[in-house]
Amino acid sequence: RTMPRAAAKGKGKAAKGSGKRKQAAAVKQAAAVEEQPEAAEEVEETVEMGSDVEEEEDQVDDGDVSDSGAAAGEEEEEDGWSDFEEVADEEGTGTSLHPKVAKLQATARQKRSPKWTNRQRTLVFSSRGISFRVRHLLQDLRGLLPHSKKEVKMDRKDKLGEIIPEICEMRNCNNCIYLEMRKKQDVYMWVSKMPMGPSVKFLVQNLHTMDELKLTGNCLKGSRPLVHFSDDFDATPEYRLMKELLFQSFATPNQHPKSKPFIDHIMSFFVLDNRIWVRNYQITWKGRGKEAKDEETSLTEIGPRFVLQPIRIFEGTFGGPTLYLNPDYVSPNLHRSQLKAAASTKYKYKVLHAADRARHQAGIPEVTDEIETVFKDADRIVQEHLAKKQGELKAQAQDQDVDEGDSDSEEDEE
Image 1 (cartoon, rainbow, N blue to C red):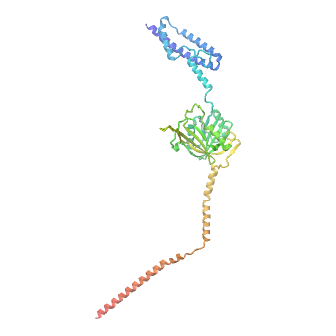
Image 2 (cartoon, one colour):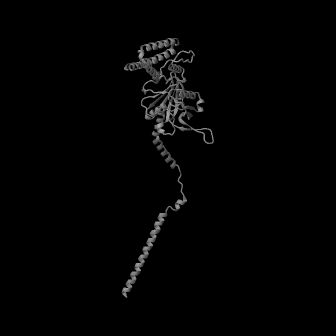
C-alpha cells in the first residue's frame, strides 16, 4: 500500500521539475524567434524532444500509473504549463506557441517600437557652495521634471565646457540645467543643449521656493505640465531661441516611463522688463452646476517662482562665440560697487548742501514787519507799569502811617 504513494510523490516532484525546465526552454524559444526567425523551428523541435525524453525518464511501474498521473496533472495545472496550444502569431505563420511565449513576443515587439518617441532627458545639478535656498530650488525642479536626472555637485574650478558634456553623454541626457552660486549671494542658471549647444546664461533674481511660499496650490508629482509662453517670446530672435531651449528642457515628453498620465499644472514663462518671469500654477476644474453651464477653470499658484535675466547666449555648450549680449544687463558686482560709492559720498553731499544753504540764507535781504515792532517791548512796558503801581502803593501806605502817628501824639498831649 505504501509503494504507490511514494511513487506518486516522486512523480509529482519530477513533473514539477519538468515544468520549470519547459518554462526555461519556452523563454529560450521566444528569444530565438525574436532574434533569428529561421532558427525558431529548430528551438521548438528541441523543446518537444526534451519534453519527450523527460517524460520517458519520469515513467514509473504500471501499478503506479494511475496515482502518479493524477499528481503530475495537478502539478502541471498549478504551474500553468500544460500542453502547448496552437496560437497564431501576428505574422500569420500559425506556429505552435505557448500563450506565455506569445505574450513575451508581444512585449518584446512593443519594446522595439515604444510610444515614447521623444527621448528628451534633462540633467539637473549644481556647483558646490550653494545656499539652502538654491538647494531647495534644485529639489523643486527635479520634482517638477520627471524626465530629469541627478548628478553630484561639481567643483567650481572645473571647466564647464569640457566636463559637463561628458557627464551628459554618460547619463544619456540631451539637455542640461546647471545652477551655480558666486560669493554666496549671486545665483546663475545655465540652460544648454547637448552636445553641440547653444547655451544661455541667466541671472536668477527674486527666488522663492515651495517650502518658503506656503502656497495653497498642489499637483501630482511626476505629472506632465502644460508649458505656456507669452507672445513676447516671438518678437525677437534671441527670445525665440530661449523659448526653444526652455521648452525642450522643461517640457516632459509624452509617454515618459516616469511621468503620470495627468495634466493638473501649468508652467508659465512671461517676458516683462527684459526679464523672464517663471511661475507654476495648479489647474482646477469646476464641474457643471445645476444650470448645466460649461466647466470653469481656475489657476492657483504652487511654486517655485523666480525671475531670469538673460546675460549672454553662446553658440557652444557653456562657451563659444557669443550670439547675443544683453545691453541692459548690469552685473551684481557693479551694482553693489555703485551703491557703495553712493554711500561713501553721502557726507560730501551733506557738507556741500550745508554750505549752499548758508550762502543762500546770506543772500536773502532782511525784512522788517511793522506788526512785530508793536509787541517788541511789551514785556518791558508791563514790568515798568507793575513797578510804578507798586511804588504808588508803598507811598500811600507810608502816608497812612504818618497820619496815624500824628493823631496818636495829639491824643497823648491832650
